[in-house]
Length: 361
Image 1 (cartoon, rainbow, N blue to C red):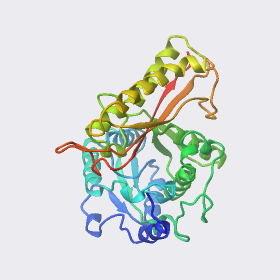
Image 2 (tube, rainbow, N blue to C red):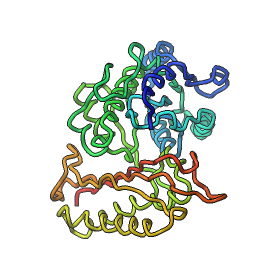
Image 3 (cartoon, rainbow, N blue to C red):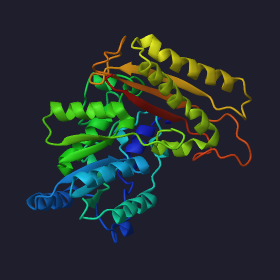
């Protein structure tokens, strides 16, 4: 939780936080940029050479989901730019920005591994990493996470107020704002996002359309662990106990998907199996002792129009729907000696989101 006055101290510290250590700006197979002007010069040179750029925006803590987007971008462009920037404006005042994992050395190692796989003969490669400071991204006012805070923001409503936006009112304002900045800085031919953050993809597509932005939004499939858990940078906080229970969201969505594929179109008929699963798992966890259980709260399970995110009472089989949900894993109440509690020793609450696309029948 944020302490009183924390907003100002976070804003001040962000301008001092080095996105990249100076010594790490050398000896890579790609160029690393912290400022806008030199990156734009490279982009102009590529444009004059009739080369294409695909941008993969990230907040670091890279996993296979990010790498799959980079590979997709490399297959469709001659050059790939990856941004690594923990964006402060998409964290609310009650969300701990300082706990978000920052793993520069591991991230760079993964990018180097991907570049070693890629060859110019078969497509593109990673050419540039944009790892800016907050001062670069927010050059005038310090970034604000207050709902009515000052600053230059992009808002996409009513999409940003639905689903995740209902619980995180500044989240999509921050996402749209930083993406607008990144798109303007890079001028990419194509930008790449994962389906796991499905509401984000809808918001970004709307922003690109409404502001006549000259870039194509490409969506890659959700990458999952072998057991079905959607890959996320925040999964490192789960640990064994919470990770097992965190699968409840995926199982609930799969049950709803099965109902749809069995011919159910009514909202209640599709979502009832999901509700049954989450209630049953939570009841079993509540019956356990504090040293055994992993408690959670279901924020929402949604059945929505794929374009507007409006909740549906019935699915139009010609259009399909987006089935999505959010589950908040509570901190562990008690831990056991030698237990894998994840990064933060089980004390960090973890919000899990997931979705499945119900395709037209």
